[in-house]
Image (tube, rainbow, N blue to C red; front, side, top):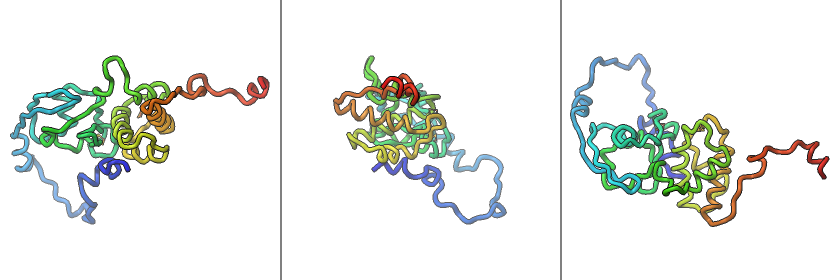
Length: 220
Ligand code: FES
Ligand code: FES
């Protein structure tokens, strides 16, 4: 089963059930509410464990893990998308489980093992997911890719031979505007095969295109 964090809408997690209140019932307040003024004055200093390294960071206490990763640690591989828990582009692993870093407070992350896309490659060796995503064209503009790679890594840690429906379900919380998802699912299947120690090569039509029906019949 995919982690609940990504299966449920982050908007719902953040805002709770929609109320039946009407716009007429809303009061517009001007200025910063006192509660938030107090938050902006508060600063947190702690050590984050990211990709096996300690990072001593100081940040406004209300900042999210996404903000601290990108702005304090310089780890900009984790992408900043909707900030509402809807797109999945900010997913990182916390203690091995996918977490939407735009909805997680960095102040709560001390002592946790955080993994970002920067930690996937080991020396000059790409992670099998990086290899298959590159070979199959499963990353196009690449904006969704870090979140998808980290979510897929967590899936493969739990399930070494996921079926295509299981992969689709695990990745259901991550949106991609470019690929149509088919190549992403194939790439995760390929990475699973590589991690199991099996031979895997990209399908021929991915590398060379598929033959026209007429040329196939001529050659036979
Ligand atoms: S879900 Fe976090 S930026 Fe979209
Ligand atoms: S590759 Fe462009 S959004 Fe997924």
